[in-house]
Each structure stands twice: as structure tokens, then as C-alpha cells.
Length: 243
Picture (cartoon, rainbow, N blue to C red):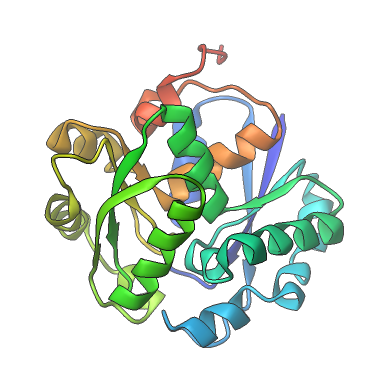
């Protein structure tokens, strides 16, 4: 059994992790611990507080008791808002507090883009435009070219969690660009696990979503290789290891 730990802010799309655990179809357990979200707002000051060391450290003991082998801060905006260097400091602090390998969804996107071998991406964000722009800048610091981004202007994660498949597909279609080699949907409050295959078929390119890359990143930290085509192109690049 490979046990993976996730610190997830509040309650919005955490059922994506239960769904992905089932979709992985092997001896992999996804343990989710909810952190105190503070103020539910896609606003820089609120996001900085959401990702503060004390809030993250409060959840790590429960993950240790679960037997987690690695932990990922499952929040994109609450990590990239710190900037490239600050996000590194955040995961280093988390690793020290947890006593295990750690990362965040922002770095998961960077590593997933590199895994796919693409250089140009489009971003379809639920956030206000100023927050979406910070994600584009974060990717730029990693050497990823952002062809364009769309910010849907949604303020709260609670509202994003209510979006249905039609909403997600519309955001993807409106945000894509012909020159982009992949599309990124960065909000972990957005339900996407069941839609990735359809989105990739719709756009004819890889689609990376926040909860998808978060799970992939935890697997990467434990060097576990899994092939799960229902989770998109990112999960078809490893040899089949399930029984």
C-alpha cells in the first residue's frame, strides 16, 4: 500500500480525491486532511494567510498517523501567490514540519508540464484576473511560456465547487489557444477528475487540472509509477504497474 497525504483547504472539490483513488485502481490510498481556510477569497492577502506555515503545520500530525509517505499542499493559489522563491520556502517548511517529502500544487503543475515535454501552455483560471496573472508569472519563472490566460473572476472556492461539467468545459474551450500545447486549469476547488478524458478529446491536447496534477505529484514524490488513462495524458506516460 502506498499512502499519499494531501492538505486540502476547506471543502469544495475534495471528493475528486476519492474518485481518483478509485480510478487509480491499485493499492494506493489518498488521505485528505482539511486545513483551516480562513477567509474564503481569491484575494492575495487571504491566500497568503491560507498558505501560512502555521495553518499547514496544523494538519501534518494527522497525516503522519495515517502513514502518509509524502504530502502535497493541495492548493494552487495558496502556493503560487508566494512567488517562485516563497513557494519553495513554503514546501521546505512543510517538509520539515511533516518529516516527509513535500510539494504543492503549483510545483505539481511545473513538474507535470515538464513531464509532458511541452513549453507553451494556456491557462483557464476560475480566479480574478490579477490572481490568474500571478500563476502565469509563476510558470514563467519556471521557464514555461504562457500563451494567454483567462480569469473567470470567481471570488470564493465555495462557488467554484458548485460548477458542473458544462461550466468546466466552457472554461476550457474559452481559455484554449491554438498555439498552446496544453491547457492548465489551476483551481483545486474545481471538480475535474471525471472530465479530463472528455476535455482532452474536446481540445485535442493534454489538459492538466489541479487535483489531477496534485495526485500525480504525490506519486512522483514516492517514485510510484501508475498508468491510469482515465486521468488523462499525464497518467499514460508510465508503464502499467497495476495487477
